[in-house]
Length: 286
Image (cartoon, rainbow, N blue to C red; front, top):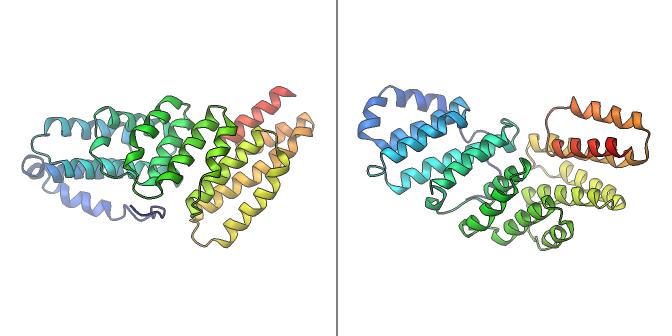
């Protein structure tokens, strides 16, 4: 597995592939179950409807286990997982609850056990999605059940995942301890680690640490040519709104409501939901 982000064209030319398969789909379904399973995975990707189509994939695997080899199942399931993760993290699909529901079904059927290696970013993101929808229990289960399948950046990935989990559990001190253990400073680790650290500083009311980190974060985004444009825009919005949010604690009620209105009308970006929760808390406390 490569450490770099999945490129936006990873699933290109699918329309052509699916049309070629559908020309002989009856033959493939009966004589080439591995290819037919791949077709179902492609159909899920093309129709962007994992909640409805994944059960079809699951049922087909169950009915044809004798005919399917482990590699066919592993490839198709991991294609589905990778696709869903990539779509969400690049802002093309917002239904994290649907994603987690599909991942839990994959888990319950034991399909994750057949996957020999899980990409470290996929590992971290599955846990983050579960945390996002407040399914802390599944986030922890997934973490400790599948960390052995990490092949690169294993310790860093575990520490980042645990830090995210502990923060969600209100254990910020432990979260910071795990962040300190993260050595890797690739683009993905930098973005995720420092975003989490900024959230911790805000929750702890350590506002004096926020502005210097925001400044260095902005410089990183400007000078790092490997940051994809969606990430650049998304994290820039997060930094901008967080900076404004920290100055609102001493402002008048009307300023907070104005900020809430602007934020609610902003396009979706990384950690927008968390910022909205913090604004609501400010309003309730005033």
